[in-house]
Length: 285
Image 1: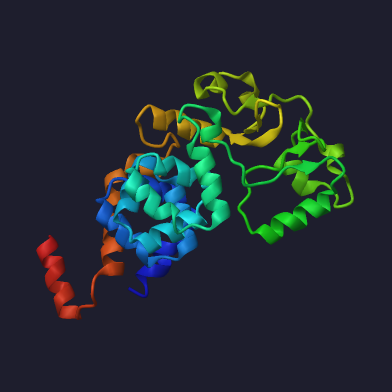
Image 2: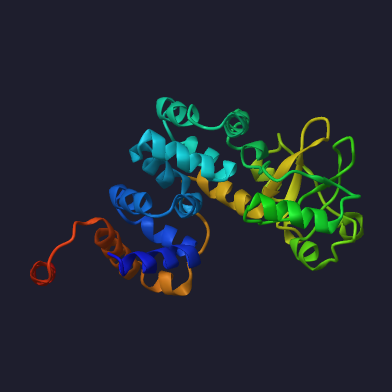
């Protein structure tokens, strides 16, 4: 077990999406056994990339305490998408143990119909003003310890959107530069009440992987990533995640399933002596 665990953790960290595609082929109980053995943050990250339908099944098996810990650690968007596939009683059991801020965010987003932008937007990274220095944003992001998929949106004092920043520009710009100097002003803001179907047809997705979301008063309320949009569209169609696994996974899903199933069993099974191991191997064959 001591040799298997580091290998499994490394695989999950480096190939989270591939591991998630494999886990979706395993019985839920085997996936639960794995997720209960690994660190909370890695378990939450793995659940975020699982198909929401499958992740919801996992949450129905977790203990209420473990389920609430995982939901608190997960990104709100991912947590919300799987909560929509859970019975109300199980959903409320998880929500009642969350911190007030996280619970409020999730309840507000669950109020949106599932086929609207507001149900899938990310509102966890706050917007910044155009006078904010690049160095200030970097420091704030480091302190938050969040994994970034996009740069913060830039807004006026009244909350209306001025422009977007590319993450690459934010990373390479000098600390002393105000974000007004690295803005992308040719963008499209989408309404939180817009349909996902209409939003997916916008040509702006050819230029950006994230677009700002505004309410009926044109005030900034969140960001919609292309990743979340694709996940939403495939979820609404009742399919598994649309992310493509790597070529090795495509060529040998069965082999990956067998290997990861073995890893799960190795991590969670009680220790046995070498003679027992030999006997089990013969029986397996």
